[in-house]
Image 1: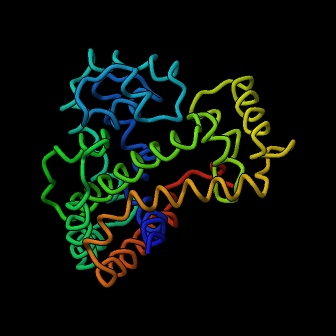
Image 2: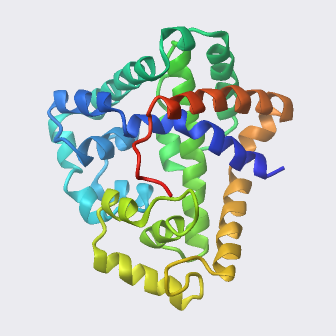
Length: 281
């Protein structure tokens, strides 16, 4: 039963994550005066928690270099308020989804139904110990179906992500170590993309890799060992367990419907170029 949580994540996440690569986001954020690049990402994703400092953002984002975060936060809040950033982000989501999927798809019954199912599922996520989820759960719901769907998938994603951080900490895995592990499996980030996007130095990356090697989790080529595969699967299972509540509440039939309809949208987004090439193995 727990694997439905992982399957749902794989099928639905791109509906949310496409905004991190959409040029519309950079356009809206720089129009507010935010610096091009990572400032918009850090401010856009953390704004739901209010004008928090760099420490809070680094803690909740987990695998980003805190030094990178501190270059943008809290300076972003001197340029634009969290409310302004959130409005710009949602406007960017609207524009990006219209560009990638088209008006006809966004007005379809499938989007309306998927949005309502995702909203119902997200209503059974609990905020305790889930700061990014809790911040987004306090936001007003958009009225337009495709924006409602994006917001609901955002809630489900951050709910799972907060739990995943707890599982990583329980396993004694730091943020950068989690990135190295993610980059060691098929479908994960390429090491260069992961290191560059999260702004870790080559030395920091090498040190984290060596720490994992000393634990027997990766080999000399930074490939997961058999022990590492089992270890990583245990973390994912624990994450699945903590992310299961919305799917249990929604039930197998309605979850299957949401996964099917959302999966089709994710496939269409991928086909429209929502993800840049070269990021994943």
